[in-house]
Image (cartoon, rainbow, N blue to C red; front, side):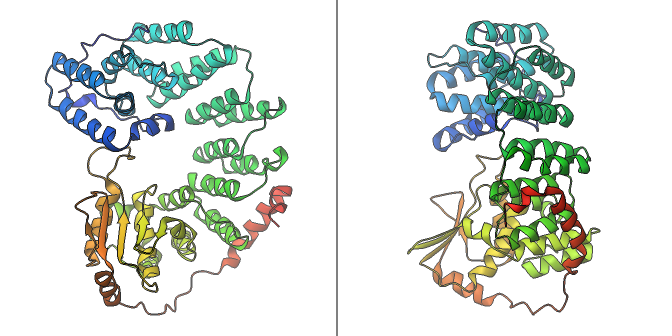
Length: 476
């Protein structure tokens, strides 16, 4: 069994124990999201651990939980503790390794090893890594994937030097397989090393392992975040050389690349080109673009009394307050079409539902304003609802932020939608009340203010598409 620190971990009452790792892996996040009863039991576990005052008490709570709950519930709780870089994840992991259903996980082992290193238990960390390799990994490819997970886990907790040590070990091995290169590129991008990630991408192509648009997007965004826009665009344009067609997925990856460096004018130009070519933004791209708007994000975070409650009011406020002209134009462009809203709407004979799952608070705010505009012209079924969840997919503990936002916005609009007594993640109202409310909302006057002409974006468009060459011609 892998060696880990003793269950006599630091007393959990110490408030400083919760150190957040904002670069937690998507894999940990998926497991931690749990679902249904496992999520609720996890919440109860966290509350109980918060109340413990001794290491012995925490040990008893952990052993009882792992012994009595399902594998799914225990792993979800472990992933949540690891995402939070909570020292209690160490004794929790030891309890999990002793469960009859235990199966070794590269993601979990790497995260625990990194947490042990942060806790100055270097010997235990190295022992866990060594035991994991000798006892659970059968091939060079499996060891390589474990090193990739170690790179990501250590880097996300500020241990850059150790992460580089694992990269050197990885590079000293004979690397084979598409999966290994994909994992290495992802980890290098998480470490903020775009040059090394691009080298791995080129190597992957030269060896005949076909990358996807996603890998190009990771490298391009990594360059964008570092401020290297020229390098970012060069990687984007190289997708065509690898035989990747600029379909919906690739077009949205390009959009997310520009959002990573907050280049609003280029995002705007790209969105307009996508609309002309009938390529629609995805939910993720919608989130990326709106989250990159600083004035809008600040407004949503503050929820001040002057927060606009209409799409027209939002664009007007951004035009007057944002120091970046393109920010208002960018939001206006997203509001000009409704593919994301259409996908978030679910219609039936008895109910129309707006599903806010997967949206950030900023994106949910804008989508709700779009939704209200659209609903004014619809024939409604018996019931209207807004599904915002209860925060089980959120990275942040506490009150679910999207639900809080939805309640606040609808309350300010004097909407009849109220929290369901049967589902705490759903706001609901009957058709007649909603129709009366929508009718009472003020009708916006036609705006005489025109947004700046898109012609000033044309030089960029022509330059970019000359550069992309064959990559863009596939859209014609």
